[in-house]
Each structure stands twice: as C-alpha cells, then as structure tokens.
Image (cartoon, rainbow, N blue to C red; front, side, top):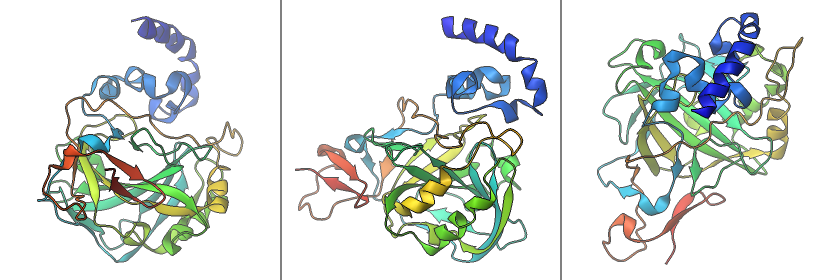
Length: 316
C-alpha cells in the first residue's frame, strides 16, 4: 500500500510532464517511477503487469523442467524478407515488411501456425545482464525475441495480442564470442544509423531462420508480453542454445540512446524486464539426455544451462 500511495503522489507531480509525450505508451521506461514495478499503475489497461499470474519473463530452473516427449521440432520458414530496423526508445526492433513473404513458426508446443511480425533485442550495459529470461538465475548479455501472431485465428498482431493463443515468442539467448552469424551482422552493421529514438534503416534479404541457433531443443511455457500491457497470451519457446555476438557489435548496441537527437536522454541498454513469479505454471522441454542409460523422469536429476556450450547438461 505504501508503494501505491507514494506512486499516486509522484504521478500527480508528473502529470503535467506527461503532456509532452503523445501517451503513456511513450512514457514508460525500464527504470525509475515509470519502470516495470509501476507499469500496472501507469495505465488501467496495463493492470496485468502488476496483477497477472502468467507474466513473463521467468527464471527457468532446470531442476523442475517437465520432459514432454510429444513435442516435435519448432519449424521456422527459410525465405528471406525485408523490413525496417528501428530504435523505438525502448528496444531495437526489426519489423518485417508486410509485403514480404510470410515467415511462419509452427511445431513444438504450438497448435497453430504463427506469422513472424517483428524481432526485438534486449541487452545490458555490462556482460553479466541483459537477457529477459534467465537460467537458474544466470542472465546473458542479450536476448533476441522473435514475435509472431496466430494468423489462423487473427488478421494482425494488434488483433492477436490480447486474444487467447494469440502470440508466439521465440527467445534466443545471446552470448559474446569472436564471430556472429551473417544474418545477425545484417542488423548490427546498421546500428550506427539508429543511434537515436525514431531513427530507422531499411534491411533487405535477411533470413529469420538464419538468426537462430542450430538446435531442435527448447523449453516452453505460457506467459505474457514483456512490455505494457503484459498480455497473457504468449506461448514462449526458449531455445536451448545461444547465438553469438562480437564485442564490437555489442559495443555498438550500447551506444544507442533512449531519446531523439534533440533530447538523447540516457543510453538504451538495460532494456529488460526482470523475471516474474512462475506461480504454479509448468515449464516443459523436449530435452532428453540420451547418454543416461535409464528411463528416469526428467526432473529426477539436477540440471543446468551451460551458456558457452548452449545446452542443458546433466550433473551426476
């Protein structure tokens, strides 16, 4: 109650400031009095951010994963597409051109086909944080999220976002290495063109599949969007292997600013929402270690996610 009371006073004080922006949608941030702890208080339509029971991201604890042998491989179409890379002031976003060929995500835990709408990048100011999802409390320097909408039931992301089984999120942890994939470099090579909020750069002939690691293993759970209004309509698929980014590329990411050229504000990095309570949700996986010569339940041994190798590994 004390937090709500204090916030109501602060909100009154800044109510005149909000007039500078077009809406609350423009005003939320990842820290301070407009950060994640207050999203649900900023706007009544965002109440799930504070009251929801299926919020994202989450910390994935391998020791309680539920092995589900019925889940097959997640399929992502191979075709190359065009789109726009933009500094939104909240994240680095690549949004597919609606005239490009549809890139579909299906299989795994999904009962429908989902059309890829956009890609978001979350990352930290330092190498020890940045990803939204964490593994046993361990964060990665960045996380790439591919978001798509259920185009068998809905006509657009806007329509699908608040609807049941509306959205899929494919989360990929990003680790620092000496090289990165050609498709990731298509994005990072243009970062110097989007230093400030609102700046955009067209990108052509990029493969969404080319941004993914070479693995068929994943973890999955039912959650929410990780930005306001935190809609609890997302099936999250966290791939069980990272992709890689170079130090030079993440240095460019950390130069991006939250504001426009006239008012650059502060740097964009640390644009991640902290892990939310799992409550009684299950996190399923199709990972099974075939080196173990028995049929013990998946949760009967301790596991961990080894980021530099990129898979869940058994500890005897």
